[in-house]
Length: 141
Image (tube, rainbow, N blue to C red; front, side):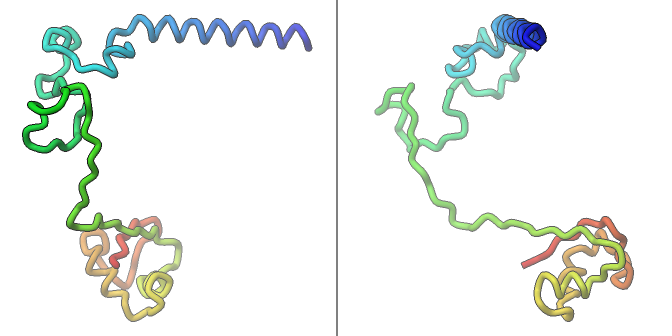
């Protein structure tokens, strides 16, 4: 038992060292490259597309005139609210011998609202009387 433990410990250490050496030899994975902007010379050598910006704060919103008034290495973490709420879609996977009326009763509490589900899924459902098991349906609000 003791020998197996030592063998496993040694094997794990070898794997960790090999992974560290592999990561250290990859220029695209270096910590300096990940956390700082790349120059155009580095971009050409690493084959990144020209559309990738040099700034490390990709995707953040800045006010007009930020570049003149603030240090370019600082990031504006201002949060802006959206006007529209993000719509989430609910799905249902049809089970064996399940009908649109059954799904409507489960989701809305009324079997009479099945046309609402049918209209949202006309591209998937050919005949509302027969729905195939395994079909993924969108359940509208």
